[in-house]
Image (cartoon, rainbow, N blue to C red):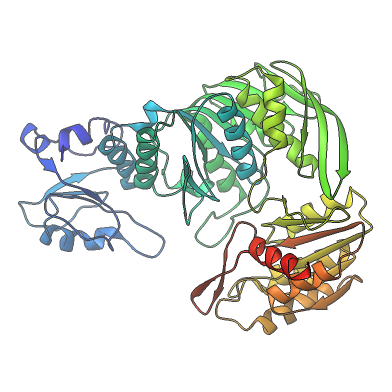
Length: 499
């Protein structure tokens, strides 16, 4: 139980009504914002307006079921005895209520938030690995899940709802964590899920067109603006100055600004420290693709990665910039980076010493093109791309991915992904329209397990095999049911049967 006055003590900027002392003494038993959650006696109900449902329409039912206080943006016709607190923004109210409910856990953690179109997950784990080697205990909130010590929880959003974020942070504090590394999505910022958190470090990785249309962002300008909100609530901003949107991100930010990149700092953004990578060298040995580089900035050092791609050097450079505030041990940093493998993000899975297999989440044409171009730089004798497309999603994505794979791969293996409520054969037919726009060799194997077996059994010396689309997912969704399917387990079973 918490006093209402205690829960709204930081509401000054959003409160649209007076709250007398008597109401402030009211005891609150729970905070509820999801209409699917059971209303308990004495709880506070926050009316959230979503894309397809408005919680304000549920306020009367919540009051009749015992909600002691209703937080609302709108005037409501409720019984006179119901306490209604009017606010300018219900989502901001939920963030502040949740922080107070869990005892402001962000104030007990060093908070590191990352935003950008690509690279967030990989960079999160790079930062976490360095900091933990340096003696800190880190929790993670992101696309791949919530990590608290040895426990991992599934999440359906990159940035969960604000109540969940505060609850996870509280669990991290209780588990002895001193640091949070968190992916902050544009939707999370748009919907004020991290409102009220004063991040110690905020990171900008890069920006390209994504999440535009539908219930997400109306255009690129809104998408970019939402990303920039993170840098108005942080103490130190760490930004990719090679990206043309860097200056926009930190416009009007009061944070200390540090930059990283591979080019000479252009001067468009004045930075306190500039971390730069140089001397990039691609490596490939015993079926492992990697890259080595030098860096200068807070201090100088050398590092290497056991995952491919120049873009991963940018992720590493970003991690080094943040980690420089916690350790100056270049050997420790190099060891942590080399041993960072992120589930489903160009994740290497060993199948032999003579060829390479990687699992990646690339599930649209932009991501697939980027990954395939990255792998091409290693000059494999043959580049094999296995992928499918999700059902009940854009057909254009299927055409575009088919064309990209056919153009950039030596062999495309078209298979199933998450067919949902469509027939896999129909999705494959759409993909083949794109495949036939280029001249790459291809085959179709509808069953994904059979397709993976085919590429392994028919692998050749010098092959680079990419399993695209599923990434960190460990299921296949068919007609509304999620069936367990982990590509790593499938590979292990295949290799076992071959020996």
